[in-house]
Image 1 (cartoon, rainbow, N blue to C red):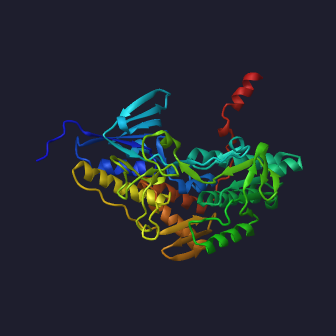
Image 2: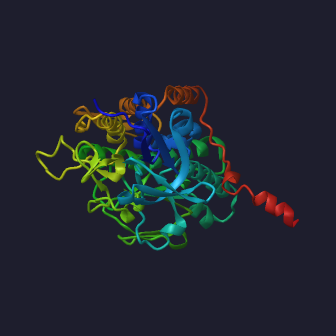
Image 3: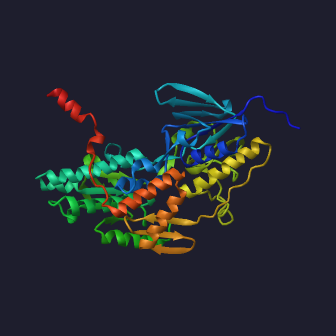
Length: 442
């Protein structure tokens, strides 16, 4: 009979996103008393369900309902609000910078690397100064208020050129994040102008989509991508495919085909990359900066380190026969399923068992194109319009963590169906001290 450990196994989970939350949640349900301790480290005290960010930005869902408080769900885990700055596996140590600014070192027996991905920033002049990313709930709230503030300013200005600039909105990136953000926000601005801005016309609003590739929504079949472009163009949205952005300096957009225009809104959704902290770690990485893993989600050469999600290169066993180098794509569908198995695998190994390989065939993809509109390529079915929109909502409602959040989101949708959506601008939230500073100088 194996000897009993004198101290619980120290499990350190880096990241509180899909993988971090679901792994820690699974562990706290399965661990026996004093078998192991679980610590979760993330800069934010919540997990964000990213597929609902576009609806949160457009006012269809209350922003607080698309985030899951880590401390509320992970009651048997220690949650540390901090940013990981260094991983040294040879010392089994992780350096973090806590919310109050102090730096500390965390030691572990088992490590879970679930740091996810960050926005990919390209060396385009003006991007850092003018661009608005779209990966966090804070950015979604900011963007909503920013767009509504531009409508208020446009309705107030007497300068036609300034109004044109204020009412020009640019989205760069034709993946799911870009298309859904564009479609939801265009719906919001159209509704707002039709109902609350009598001196503005829908025709005054200009939405522009810029995509460097020759198609959008690469996760669905090409015919659905073509259909989506057609639907966007019917709504007056300008779509530039096979076109790169060359400059955004001072809000002056220059595209590779020679097109130029001015805008106060540049939404950047052109891809993601693995968390850059990994580059300075001593873990094996692939050419895309992701942690190399086995099909069981153990880091190659390090069986006491586990990884999954956007920062992991996990072999996609459903495709490796055709392509031996195939890895699971960075999406929520894989991250959630990987995390659930990951928790079980860690428990098995702690108790002397063998982990199970991750295998999941992609069921397809769904995308919202605004209220009552969508596309879906799932279960070998091609769905468009209202049925696809319903499919999108049903799928993501099911995937949303905790019944608390599911019910709150369902009520948001029900109230949105009974009453008009809220399109009020809360622009002061972006600069809450402005009025205080003005009064102090008067």
